[in-house]
Length: 428
Image 1 (tube, one colour):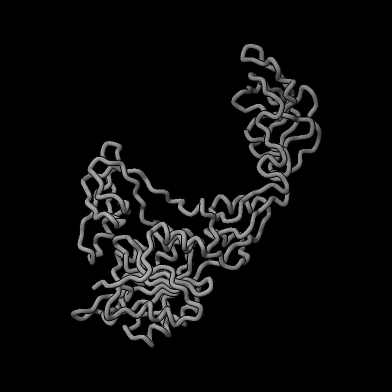
Image 2 (cartoon, rainbow, N blue to C red; image 1 turned 180 degrees about the vertical axis):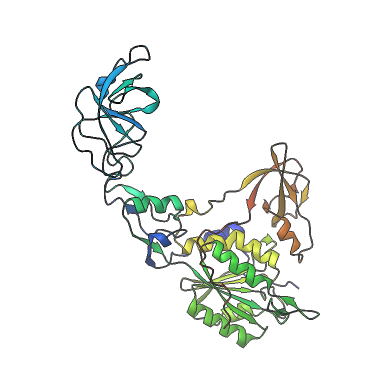
């Protein structure tokens, strides 16, 4: 049963509220453990990369002017005087009219200023090579600092580290990187009807789906979930869980109890927290309206809807962004998984004055991606399994029409940060 909501916000207002949260403290992570972490400051190159002139192809190191005018009919002839060995400094100097064998990545010998690709050469004998195409100075040559010059910006503050970024850092000899601490999220399930997932529910009871779903969502977003357990709809029990959560984590998520009614304890509990500020009591979206967002200092307190469908929609739209802000991720890089465009397969109605999020399944037909709306009763979790993402119907729109092109926000997939296999459910 729904009743009064005291501070209903639009989705844009909620996103603006979320953007007001500050990144967590800085710490240093070994580069091997940096995947998915967010840089807390700019990274500059401590040295030139590469540190020496090297070849970008397999072939022959030469003086470029010795190849000028070379053609298939009139090739330039060079005497083979040496060979570059990978990992070694070439001994000797390349003189006019000579060439050195060189592999990709090999260091250019002194006197060479270009490399002829092996495809543009022919061996006359073991000591002579024909060059059938001229090369210009520095052709097929990578100079010191071509990748990164000493002192140049490598990666900016707020960048979430990817595998290729770690490779660059390793190449520069950077062993530890400054990153924002991972957000720690205390996940609390409330409800007299909730039982652990390993138990068989009695009539009127349900397993704790939300705790598993939300904890996994946190891991996927680069956070560390700390699931406190299941608590009955009793003020003292929930209040203690919230206090414990705030002590151990950077934010608290309560699943259940946020619809205004006889069992609504979430807001009452939040109001007992020192320096608590109510930021939103209700969001004008469907599903997900009965959501509470507040804060105590820079720690967020969130009351999520009890239905897992609604809770996950709120998590996808808002909580991922909140975790991103606490991680210090740059706003322009928050949504790496940008919506994809699809063609709506059928009409979808909506009530004016409410922003609707409709679950859709993506299908491909003759090279065109279609979004097929999933219509299901609000409490059916099967709709989450068969859907690939969400489409948004604006608050001022009465619906969308078949054949319209719509952006689809795909559900989060894949880990943004490596998981070491430690169970993310901790009973207390």
